[in-house]
Length: 441
Ligand SMILES: NC(=O)c1ccc[n+]([C@@H]2O[C@H](COP(=O)([O-])OP(=O)(O)OC[C@H]3O[C@@H](n4cnc5c(N)ncnc54)[C@H](O)[C@@H]3O)[C@@H](O)[C@H]2O)c1
Image (cartoon, rainbow, N blue to C red; front, side, top):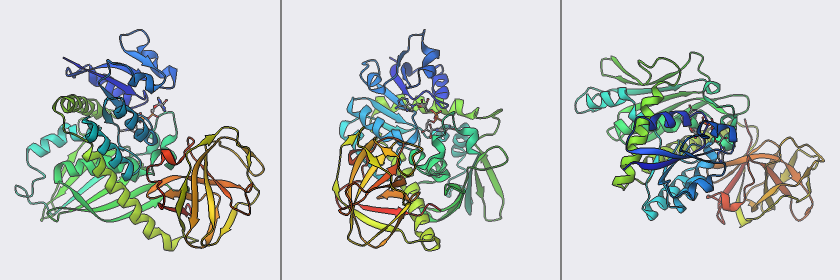
C-alpha cells in the first residue's frame, strides 16, 4: 500500500517532491499546504487535499508522513507539531537553525517512535552513488591524500520570490547555514563522521557569510576542505574532488549530465521520497544525520565568532537569562526612544522583547511584542541598534531600539524578529543561558 504524504510549504523545492511522487510508488501525495492560496492552485481540482493552515493538514488522517518544506526558521516548530500529531517527518535542510533544536527534535522523534529524516538530496545523486559503489572514497581501496568539496552558487538564483534566505534570522546565517548542511552531509555519507579543524569566511556589507572555506578531518586523518559560496559568478559548482598522493584529481560532479538549472534535483528528490517511505516502514531513523550537520554548522559559526571578536570595534556584551517570559501582546504601546545606543554596566538587568513590526524609527509606537525574559549583563558594554542578539548559539534577531517605560529600573530592548518570539519559542532560552549582543560586521 502506498503511504500518504503531505507537503507543508509549496515554494520552489515543492516542485521536485511533486514530480517525484509520479515515479515513486511506495508513497503518494495526499495533501498540500501553503499559507499563500495561489501556491495551492495546481491542486484545486485534483484528489490532493489543500490546506492554508498546516495544523489542518496535520489533522488529516490520510497523512501518514509530512515533508516540511518551509523557510528554515519554521522547521523546528512545524517538525515538533508534526511529531506531536503522530506524523513521520521528512524535513528540508537545515533540520533546524540551532544544534539544540535539532537535538530536541531528534529526541522527540525517538521518544515517539516516529521517523525523522533530513532531506539531504545529494545523498541520492547518481554520480555520488556510482562513485561510492566504485569505492572511490574508500581509503582501503584508493590512494586519497585530500578531499575538496565545492558548493558554489549565486543565492539569488536559488531563492524563491521570498527573500527570507537573505535574512539570517530566518535562514540561520549565510552560506554556511544554507549550503553547509548539504555539503557536510554528502561528505559524511561517503567519508564518515568529520571533525572541524578550521574555518574562514568572507562577509558581505551586511555581515552575512557569502563565502567560506571549512577545513575538516576524517576519522582516519584525511584532510577535507569544503568551499562554499553564495556569490559565485560562474553559475553553479557542486562537486567532490579526490586528490591522490601524486596530486592527481578525480572529480565527482553532482551536476554532470544535468542539462539546465536544478535538473539534477528531479532524480535526487525521487531518492528522498523512496528513502522516506522505506524509513517509515522500517523504523529506527531519528534525525541523526540532520543533527550531525547542525553540529558542524554550529561549530563553524562559534569558531568564526571567536575569531572575529578581537577585530571588531567593540567587545561583545555578554550576559545570562535570569527570568523567562512566555507571553505576547498585540497592543503593548511601547515607544522607541531617540538614542541608538545604550551603555550597560555589569550586573544591570534589562528586559528582552521581540517584535515583528518592521520599518520603525525613533518615536514610533511598538504594539506587537513577544516577551523573552530578563537578562543580567555579566560585563559592561554598549548595545547599539543593529547589533545581533544571540541566546546560546542561536541568533535571535537584530536590535531595533529601546523603550524606557520602566526606566530607571530597566530598559526594554526591542529585538527585530520575523515573528513574535517568547522564551517558549527559543529552545536554548533556559534560566542561566548565555546571551550576547554582538556588533554586526
Ligand atoms: N531553493 C533551493 O535551491 C533549495 C535547495 C534545497 C533545499 N532547500 C530548502 O527547502 C526549503 C524551502 O525552500 P524553498 O526555496 O522552496 O522556499 P520558498 O520560499 O520558495 O517556499 C517556502 C513556502 O513556504 C510557504 N510558507 C511560509 N510559511 C508558511 C506557513 N507557516 N505555513 C504554510 N506555508 C508557509 C511560503 O508561502 C512559500 O510558498 C528551505 O528549508 C530551503 O533551505 C532549498
